[in-house]
Image 1: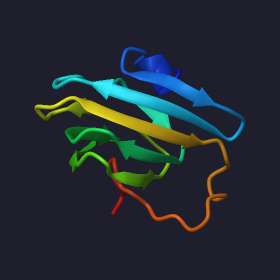
Image 2: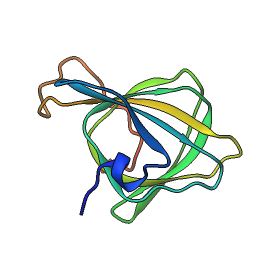
Image 3: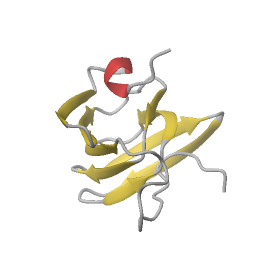
Length: 116
């Protein structure tokens, strides 16, 4: 099954730029919107709006609330999400095409469920 978010949720994700090293996605939704299960490689996320979401993976769920202007590292993960707030979500994802472990000097930013 295809897990590319642009394929699973083309009404929410769109490619704004791509080359051999990165793919840049724009994500927009409204309160109550929910994504299908999809996968992101290691990425940098920049929030353009403040939002509250429920992120779920492997039977675990977490609620995440982020302010506009937040930038963070997101380790590769598969999940689905739901806008559980009262504002629209607007984010940019810069997906890396490097193999995992090639990135150096970055810290984890736990967007989805973690094993910790």
